[in-house]
Image (tube, rainbow, N blue to C red; front, side, top):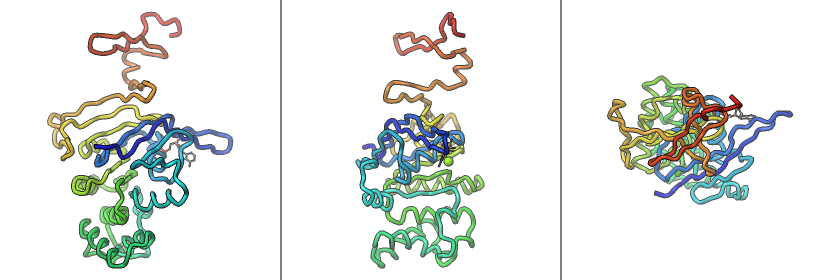
Length: 296
Ligand SMILES: Nc1ncnc2c1ncn2[C@@H]1O[C@H](COP(=O)(O)OP(=O)(O)O)[C@@H](O)[C@H]1O
Ligand SMILES: [Mg+2]
């Protein structure tokens, strides 16, 4: 499968008054077309910044971001506009950010298609298909406030998919839902991913995400630090059920320059400070603390 998303050395520095806030520091990420991946990391680690850059809502301070063969930093303003409207869909944590409160569900779903000039008949047909798929056709004349949180998020998903994006970016989409409803949303995303080959990136705090996606990448301090690959997903459904049956492996990730982040608990356990010794072995490289480190 081809890669749909490629980020290389992404850096994002926000300047607030005289302070520089580094949100991303050399992040590399590749996502294949049709993949469904989870991005986890503590608050402030740069997850939303990454999604905003991928969605063309923000630009990095340095680095490269290519989606579907387009170098986002080289697009003209109008090409970027087209990209945002046609190629990516956003699902935010707050339903209010996804839906317009004074429009019916049907009009909410029609609206993005009006903005891209889709003809009335196609628009109506597509809106119906999407609302049916989300189990909301019966509620089409209602306004968002008349729906439950889960229904609102399903409606938001219909809106996000209205113009048929290839990439769906979901930022904590279940953050305001109870766990049963969150499960429903994940299942829905998963079905969409399987049936329509939609590429899905989900940012979340939820450790349960691993049961729903083929790969989970962890962000720490603005960089991908490790990733967990669910072994037996070969383009089909992710392994579910007990941990034992969910064969998965955790990897640390190297950036383009060969740097890797060693998890903090290992550094502590093996008393590795600012220096370590690399020892080539038959089948790999051993990282160990120096015998005598005058600086420790
Ligand atoms: N618009 C902004 N202006 C200044 N700093 C920001 C802005 N957006 C995010 N940051 C900072 O960048 C870092 C990463 O933020 P964010 O991407 O929102 O993290 P996450 O989504 O993982 O919680 C944080 O330290 C945050 O305070
Ligand atoms: Mg965030």
